[in-house]
Length: 381
Image (cartoon, rainbow, N blue to C red):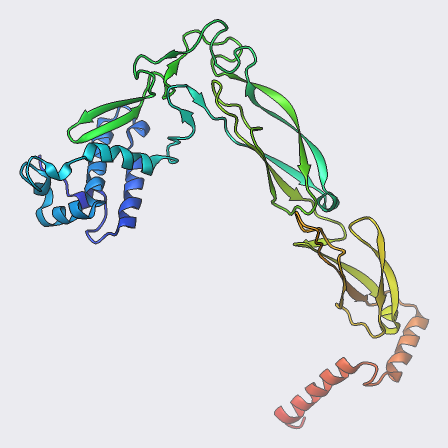
């Protein structure tokens, strides 16, 4: 039976670069990996084809030979005879396979081979705090149900007085290797699920897992200046590991509740304050609260326009892990009077008659431009 073209096997063009080759190999290897298709002989065959093709095409010398001679380059007599073109293939394959799939299938780092121990999962806890708490910091208590090490078996998973035994199928390695042609394939041991150990007498308290579920109360220190989305890590406070494995970490994700008065922009705070048109025209002052719980006075000069901002230096939020602080910005909005009495209307009408370009320069200038525009651009009315 003739062998498939390596490029067709990896579903790439002959001009594909190393990045395209690697990407296609990852995708296809994940799809046809025997662990994802247990008992499927066709998947195992496709997986071998994919690895054989990638091993050749990722090597510049092998790829050049294949492009020139095809599969004959690696058959008897090809590239020096006796299959010399594939020298060292079995050793190189194991290394390449590990580099590609570590982290994709959870291989490496999570389980200590031959010990049966597995690191516990990391946990996430969402916590909402107020803006005031973000300003001053907070010592908070976190209550959460999580897996902890079984106290009865001390995390071994075995019944008191017994111990886990090395798996007889894999010899305690957690992996089974078998050679086929040029390939040396390594698969997770199905008897011990890759742990390298089996528990013949499981602990009745944890059913052999080495951990039980319990609610815990933890203390977390929230420093001043944290922002929305800040993540705090509590090392080793996550889920307990299996059979004595190390615990995962707990990550506290902070979110800030909306505030009735302030809007936050990094370390700066913003607020809007309505003022009367009399205060805006004549000037004045008013008090505003600050995030630290005190008050401060803001002076308004005469002729203040709606939308003007006043900066209060250092009255904003603290900058995380520093002695600096942001500013507070007060934006005034001139409020138009409503529900006027007859006398108030008369006074405003009288004020309007007495107004001139000097008292309302912006509107006077604007309408002067409008008049010039229609006078020159639109012709006489």
